[in-house]
Length: 430
Ligand SMILES: C[S@@+](CC[C@H](N)C(=O)[O-])C[C@H]1O[C@@H](n2cnc3c(N)ncnc32)[C@H](O)[C@@H]1O
Image (cartoon, rainbow, N blue to C red; front, side, top):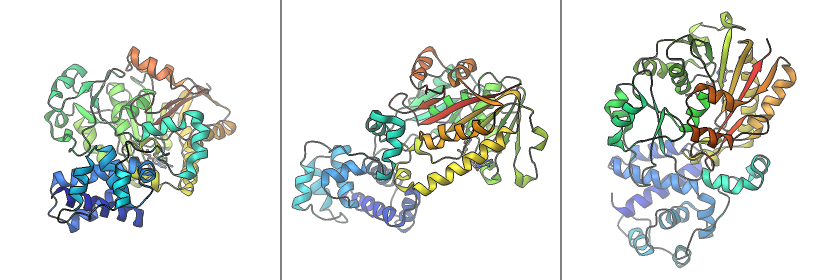
């Protein structure tokens, strides 16, 4: 496809996204089905442009004084992808291009720089002010950046040094914050991301794709070698595999999810990663957890949430999130906390994790839980991360800037370049 055709496609997809309120991925897949001539490079270009446009949608619309998809896409090309005004003007008039620039568009695209607007939905403003106060605008700016590709180096199969050496072909660098993490810098916006899952190191189970924030959250399980650990919301098993590596295949790890379909990938993933201490259970398999009541040293709860912390990777989700969904998640979180706490043994602990920075999904939920569960009390999350032995000195310093007044940790990309996560630890009285 030529440049003009790609621009038209991005405008078409963004219009469809806004009209149907479907995930951007769905809008792109539907477009792809009816435009089969588009190659993989075209698709990478078009989806990269749509994602960047959504990251800064309000600022782009403010610059253009127009929030229509056409205006937003043209502004993204000009101000985020730094395409010259002449090149934009020429591309739109190509065959299959979206048509010549209007005078107003020409003038707006001649601006020196992008106007700054809050690139989040209006209704969230009080929630953002509540959690971040005066930092809100700068934190949200960090959430509108592109994300890197983070990798977890699987110590069940290799050493971090060997894994990093094997990852040179994809230009991965060891993380300065976590001994078992590496990073591939975010690719250029119009470029395809390197195919990590096809390199030999991936197939040998040496690496997993996992955001650094997610890896740090898993490390809050602490020292768990030989322990009885329940991963209560295991889903596809990203955290399960990280926990198994921390346990060095000792003790017993139970991976549970109420939705059996979500657990499916975990069977193959665990095999590839060399995990031998996991039992996968779900209610659908008739495998309840009753035998584990009050027996677990650690119950790890990676709770269902709005996913606000992943806005850098999925900027469409911030525009699709509604107040009603936020409320629904809170109800689910209260349920999960109550259910999961049942399995913590006296003297054991529960680790609470969400990929959301909102207080309504974290502090408020934990306060409500602690009010009715007097045998649990807050413990400093950072000390458990330190006990895991995974964080470097630089990592500990960076994390100490993320500690909340209650001793939890709120990761935000302005402080640690990773997805947003909230991590809290509660211990149960003996
Ligand atoms: C954030 S996702 C888990 C992601 C996963 N831990 C990972 O690292 O890949 C939350 C999971 O909680 C599960 N869930 C929601 N409510 C639950 C409940 N009451 N009991 C158990 N699992 C629940 C969902 O099915 C979903 O898979």
